[in-house]
Image 1 (cartoon, rainbow, N blue to C red):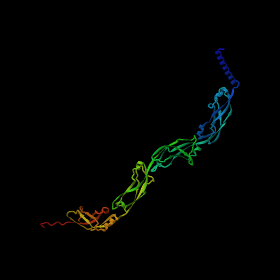
Image 2: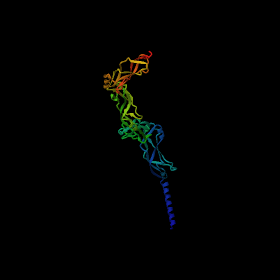
Image 3: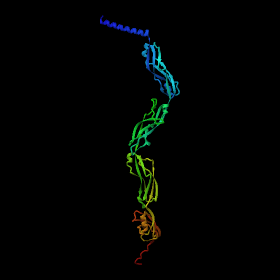
Image 4: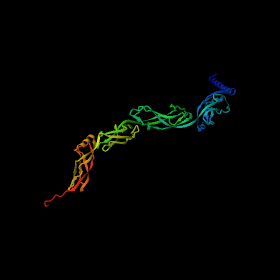
Length: 422
């Protein structure tokens, strides 16, 4: 036999075998069984459930397995992608547990459309339905640790963006939320900071909650801007203007509060003097006990940590006396030409104020160094008149004296000198 005839014989044999196989499959044994696994279970009319504010939180089976009997030609067409398994949720109107019967549909198989279910791993599916709710929560800032010494984080002006979060999900899960928090560790912090931080949801016992994939949060992270302020303790003081015989050492000063802690931008706080002056008092004319309240005028951006806005000052004058002395040295000056002036007042009472020892010395010494000048340059009134005299104190610069006293002066015209002819 030639080689070509041998090839033809082999091909004819193969063709005959195929035809024989087709005959057996289609006519002798047309039916066969097959197993299809991992067929997904689809819940029908889920949009209706959502419109009713309901959500499925649990489902015991998500797929099933079928043992099928059908024509051999159909088996390649029966797969987990072409077989549909449905459960209908359209009749569910309230939260609870439900069992749904499953409907199965097969793809169109032409004339050989018969498919028999031999066995079915799952004939129904159990689901749990809960109400879907939405909660809007204010986010609380929580701090841990301590900032570096000499600094303070300004929690009052901390900015959290956004300050609220919206959570949507099953009511049973969301009902456990006590609060939403952002926690930040301020340990060793010494400058203003801005960071992105995760949100934590806590239950009533302070434990962090872990949500299922059914819970949606509009923001998973928030932006924190936290000002950090420099703090410093300052001593408070007053500017004292000496005068009236009173020196600074004679003024016993009490301030309430005496010291304050301030907080503010580091560059501003560092420029403040260690003694912060809250106001001034003129010692010239205050009584022996004097009180005044001053506003605490701190630089812009600086405030008192304790919230103080005013300072109460009390001044007590010590070692100072006020007394009356008599001055007999009264001097008339600038008497108008053609007039004669005489003093009616021989001695004037003058109030002096100063150190106790010096005032006592002046009072006991008749020649106390005080004198009174009476300027008559603008006085031409004949007869007695009261003129203001100015008290001079050249020998006791630390003692204050009354500047003006009233002096009675008698003014008269001079008689003309007789001429030679007379």
